[in-house]
Image (tube, rainbow, N blue to C red; front, side):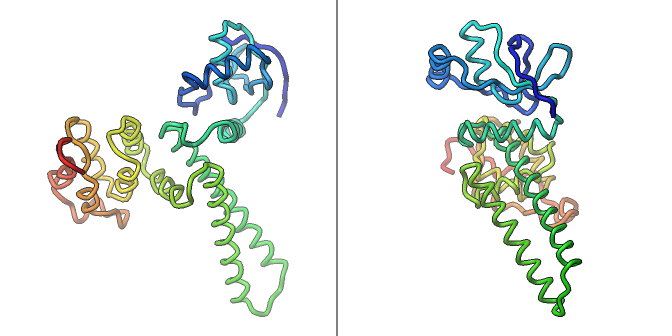
Length: 271
């Protein structure tokens, strides 16, 4: 991974692909601008080249915004040749160090949890490989006991990993588990639901309940939410709808569209 430190034109920068576009506003932005004016830029931003004399910001979107408003034309940058995977890792690690999970919109939160989920899978796979190596290296007359210990060790590692991920995000393990359930939804359903969440049309708890529903019913619900903007979700009615139990559950036990839409009630009614 090549690294080059130099001053580059701010106009040559573009945001990272996974960045939501949301940056500091108000007091936080003013504090950052005052700090830059008084003390200069403490740390260079991190970028990667994407085209001739063009760079993608990996870490430093808020600093770039502050420098632009201050009328600066250049900024010190740490230029690195990064793969998509390396860039994503630096992007999330830097954001988790500098911002609170609660500061992000839900689109950002979902992307962060997807990244964490990927890390959990990779660590779990590494653990399985280590177990296999241990099994091949150590001869134990009690084969069943060895397998049991390996399963317990693997479960312990996964639990520890989840706990670490939750602590890194500043949320409970239970909340992380809900996010992990939600991100299993296909993008065609997840994206409009995240939009409704960021628009405050649905709550996070409602999204979690929806994530356990059948895809065919979720599609109907999204359609209803978009068509009837004067209605809101009744969480209790939502919980009465069928849950996803099997891959072909969308086909069997079909329910009437009107039954799904009954979960949408007038905004004048109490939830």
